[in-house]
Image 1 (cartoon, rainbow, N blue to C red):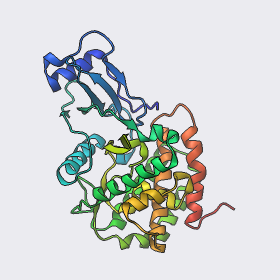
Image 2: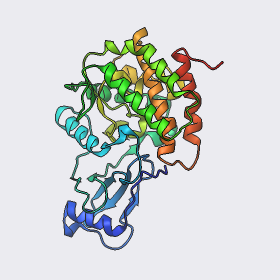
Image 3: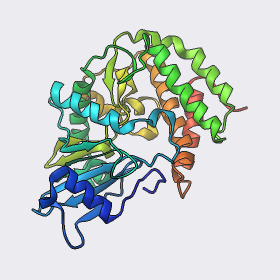
Length: 328
């Protein structure tokens, strides 16, 4: 996926990063020791072969001159914090962090190294799998996601703050930030922005049912799942994590909008039954939030085609309809 947020670096800079992380003896020579992992949408990631043959992954945050959406500020710091939480408080398989550098001395953005995971990306291979095998993996993902959500926070909202006392305050701030981002760049979402705000306000009471902050990823799609021999071996890309309502997790999105996929295997693995009426309302708000991001981020990331926008825009209409707004 091409995006202007990808902060590509020269071989000379990559070698300097490797030396700082692993020492001069591990700096590779010759050619062919670095290749870009192209399926990411935000950070640039390189697969690197060190001089001794070990393979690692280098992730580099976007360049500071590229405007990102409000919730994406400090994304790499969020990911590092989340990885530490998951490594120390759960059995969820996540990458180790070999080295992290936020000094901006070698390049203009933070970066970190982690071991290369020799496994398949579920999002890439999913269409090649028999239904039963894919469902079994999604059940595993549900169980993994439940363990992630078991981590409790001291506040709602961003991991590092500012915290909110209520989930209503945290989520309405999140969605307002997205709307302001869209207005700032003049993104056509197909609706008057104040109409979307009104819809959120009309259904905000449903958010008050959530009283305990839980660690949520809300970007845990199959494309962030690495699998091998029928098992999940690693969960990657944790830069959107925050404290909130577990129902905001991606695995629940299909309960309201079928285009997000059949949620049944995930929910079986998670151990969650049919959603109540209030839960359905909350999940519809979360679908609205997600689809707004999918539409608006295409402008921020400078997408070179309209594929994502063209997919998300009609589903944004669907989310609005589920919340009581249809076009006349």
